[in-house]
Image 1 (cartoon, rainbow, N blue to C red):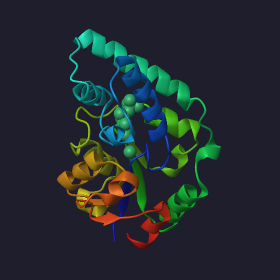
Image 2: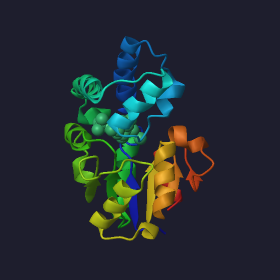
Image 3: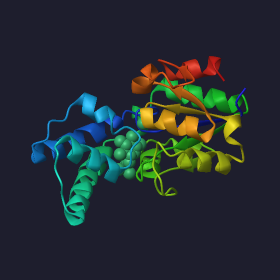
Length: 210
Ligand code: BG6
Ligand code: MG
């Protein structure tokens, strides 16, 4: 049994991964770089600037630091504009019920997200109340696949990594969880990743796993 569960946010608790995709796609289109869902999967769990580097790499394009900053800020402006449509209603009943049941079973739960917008998203969707801790892009120096965000999340919960499971839709997130000594659970895009310790299709399946 795992005492702690650390949830990735974008693409696990909410479909904000689609908003990241739309915002990056608009930037890639402007740069003339072909960018579809397959390419977008490479960006899951990866920081904003590292995501831009991946897109530029796909287009064999080199830009100055200043130009990259401008593009990263433009992408974030569009993404944050999309986020304004979030309300508590977008959180599925399945997510709410799973988080509530984990609490009822005495588990500690945290968010472990690379995003600097995580707390804004949690506020807009009224999800903050479910979590004992939030570890996000504002308290890390290294993004997934580095385990830092999960190691800090576990520390915020007062638990060791081997007492926690991580739920992730990103290959980089599963790698991060494994590197940090956590049980890794893949969902969505990461449900077909062979390095995930366990794989689920629906978040409520967690209740039978941990
Ligand atoms: C992760 C997403 O949660 O956060 C990535 O999976 C994103 O796609 C990363 O790049 C950083 O997000 P933000 O909101 O700080 O640009
Ligand atoms: Mg994710």
